[in-house]
Amino acid sequence: MTPSILLATDIDGTILPMDDRADYSREIVRFREAITNREEIRLAYVTGRDLEMTRVGIDRNGLPAPDILVCDVGTSIHERDGESYRLDPVYRERMRELFGGREAEEIGRELDGLSVLTLQEPGRQREFKRSYYFPGGLDAEEVLRLVRERLGPAGENCNLVSSVDHESRGRRSGGIGFLDLLPRGVTKGSALTYLQEKCRVSGDRTVFAGDSGNDVGALLGDCRGIVVGNASEAVKEHVRREASRAGRLDTVYFAEEELIAGVLEGCRHFGFLRDEGDRD
Image (cartoon, rainbow, N blue to C red; front, top):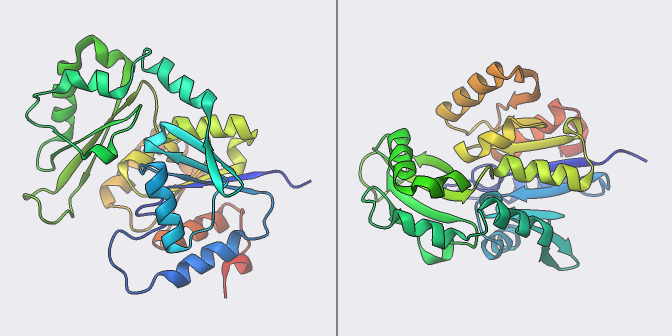
C-alpha cells in the first residue's frame, strides 16, 4: 500500500488569487486533475477563514473538496463526513486548555481601549480567535510590544500572529496590519503537526504551501514547504533566513510560478507529483 501523503495548503494568495483575474478556472482544473484519483493524498486546506467562508470559497471556485479543513488560523479543525464537515472535539478541548480554560472574547477584553487596534468585524471573531486591524504604517513589533504589555499575565496563554498587507486599497498609506490573538503556541504550523499525528503521516510525506506571514510557522515545520512565487519578497527573505538558521533550506522550495502553478511546481520538486501528472 502506498504511504499516505498529507497535502496541506493555504487558500487566499496560495490557491486562490487575491486580485480579480479574468479567468482562473483553468488553473483550478489543473489542480483538481493533479490530485484526482490519488487515493494516497489527503488534502487539507489551512486558512484564516472560518468554516462557512471556506466552504463558500470552495464551492464558488470549484476547488476540490478537502478531507480536512483547518480554519480560523489553526484554532479549529473539521473533518469531512459525507457532504458536511464535523468539528474535531479533541482539538477543540486542546484549544481551551491552551487558553487557560478561557475563550478569546474574555481575554480580548484586556485590549479594550488600546488605540493602535481596531476590532475586526463580528463575523471574523471565533471561540478561540480574536482578530484586530492596526495601521500598516506602524512597526509590527512595536504593536506586539504594546499588546503584550496591555495583556499582562493573561498574555502567557496567548499567541500573537501579525501580518501587514501593503497593497490594501482604501486605507491610509502603509496598508493595513492584521493581528490575531490565539491560544498559546497555536499557529497553522501547530495545527499541521496535530494533523500529522492524527493521520500518522511523517514529515517527509507532508507538504505545506503558503504565501504570507502567518504561513511561516508551517513552512518551517516538520514538512516539505512550498513558498509560491507571488509571496512578497519580505516573506521569502524571512523564510530563507529562518530556514537557514534551522538548517532546513533543503526542505523549503521557492517556486517560480504563482498560486496553484507554484503549488504544483513544488509538489513535483519534492516528488509528490509526476511531471506529466498535472499537465494538459
